[in-house]
Amino acid sequence: MKKTVILFFPLLESNNVASNVPYALLYLERMIRHLEINIILIDERLTKDYEKIIEDNANNLLFAGVSSMIGYQITGAIKFSKKVKSVSSSPIIWGGWFPTVFPEMILKENYVDYICIGQGEIPFQMFTEHLLNQKNVDEINGIGYKTNNELKINFASKLSNPINYPKINFDLIDINALINYNGKVETGFRGIDYIATLGCPHNCAFCNLVYIFGRSWFPKEVSEIITDLKYFKSKYDISYVSFSDDNFFANKKFILELCNSIIDSELNIDWEANANPNSFLKTFSDEDINIINKSGCKKIKIGAESGDQEILDLINKKTFVKNNLEIVRKLKKHNIDIRYFTMVCFPINPDKDFKMTLNLIGKAKLINRNLDVNINLFKPIPKTELYDLCLKHGFKYPKNTDDLIVFFANKFTAPWYKSDYHKQLDDFINFYLPFTNPFFFMKFPLKLRLFAFILNIVIYPILFLRIKLNFMKFPFEARLFKKIISSGLDNNYLNSVSTFKSRN
Ligand code: SF4
Image (cartoon, rainbow, N blue to C red; front, side, top):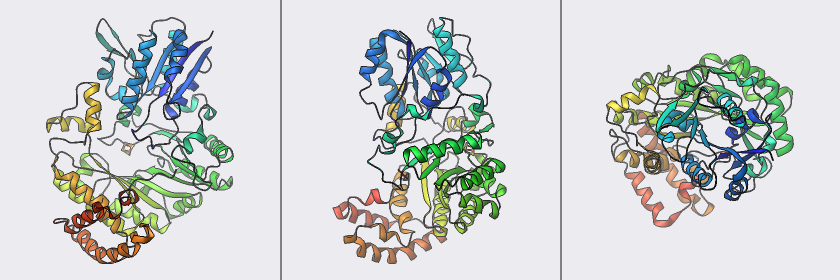
C-alpha cells in the first residue's frame, strides 16, 4: 500500500464566510505529486467530519501537514493535530504564516513535531522525500524541529521563482462547493479568487511579506493566467475574479500584457485587485487605465493605510496622504471603484492618526460614494520593523498558543488604545460613513425607505460639514440613530452597511 500524506486547511473564520480557494493545499500537493504516495487534501469548510479520514489512514500515515495563518485558523489546526496524535505516532508539520512568524511558540507544543517556515514549497518537498526515504530531515533549510527538549530552526531556503514549480491542479478542490458555500450563487455573480503573482517590491515597516520574500515579486506567465481564467469560466461559469495578490499592479508591462490578453480572449469577466497607491499613480497613465478598465477591472483595493503623513512616513509607505485622495478621483473618472484598507491607532500619537484617518476616509467617500473601506486597529506583527517600537510602548504578545487564541478572539487592544476608540469606530462605520452617501436610503427595505430618505436629506449636510471641518466630537446624531435602530426598527440594518463585502 502506498504511504499516505494528509494535508489540512483549517477554517478561516468561526462563521465560515470566506469561500476562497485553499491555495496552500494546492501549492504543496504539486511539489510531492511525483512521489509514490497517496495525498489527501482536506479543506475543513468542505469536509467537517474529517476525523474518520484520519482514523482510516492512521496506520499508513507518512505524516500530516497543516497550513495556518495568524488568527482563527490556529484553532482548527490544533484540533486536527490533536486528533492525528490521538490515533497515530506519525509526525505533524505546520506551515504557513503562523509558524513562520511564531516558530518557537508553535514548535513547543506537543502536538507539533516540525515546522516549515518562509516560502514553503521546496523545504516541504525535501521534507517529504526525506521521510519517505527514511533520511534525517534535520539539515533541511526552512524546517524547524525539536530534539532533547531543544528547539532547532534552520534558516529558510533561498527564494525560488514559483514559475519553475509544477502547475497547480484545481480539480483537486470542489470549486463549485466553495463558490456556493454561503448559498447557491446565480449566474452573473459567481466569483473566484486567484493568485497571479507572489511577493511585493515594497518594504512597509508593518508588513512581514518582506521577511519572507525580501522585495522579490514573481508574476505567473500571462498565458497560464488566461488558461486558468478560461477554465474557471467554462467549468464554473464565473463572471468575477478577485486577484488576491499582495501587489498585483507591481509591473506595468505585466499588467498591460495581461489586460490586453483578457480583452483579446473575450473573457468578459469583471475583476478587482490590490495596488500600492503611490506606485499605481506613478506607473499608470490615463491611457493605461482605460485598458485596465476595458479588460473588466471594476475595483482596485488600495493600501491607503493612514490619513496621517507622520504615520505614512513611520511605516515607510513612501507615499503622501494626498495620493490616497488623488487615486480615488482618478479612478472615478474611469468608472473604477476603490476599497481602502486602513489602520488606525499607531503607538506614537494614536488620537492624531485616528482622527486624520477617519477624515481621509470621509473625504474619499465624498469623492466617490461607492468607496468601500476596511478599517483595522493597528496590530503589531513579529518580524516587522514596527514590532520593536510597539514593545517599547509596552505591547506584550501572549507567550503560548492557548493565550494567543484568546488574544485573537477578544476585542484587540494595546497599551496606547483608549477604550472609546471602539465606540468611535462603531459610530463612524455604522452611521457616519454610510450616510455620507446621499443615496444610502436606497439600501433600506421599502417600509423604511421614506424614513431613511428624510434622514439622509437631514444628515448629509451635517456630515459634509463635519468631514470638511474634521470635527467628529459630540456624535449626538449617531448615538440617537443607534438608539432608534437598537429599539428594533430594523435588525438587519447593520448587515446592510457592512463595509467589507465579497462578490460571492
Ligand atoms: S505594499 Fe502592501 S504587500 Fe507590499 S510591503 Fe507594503 S503592505 Fe506589504
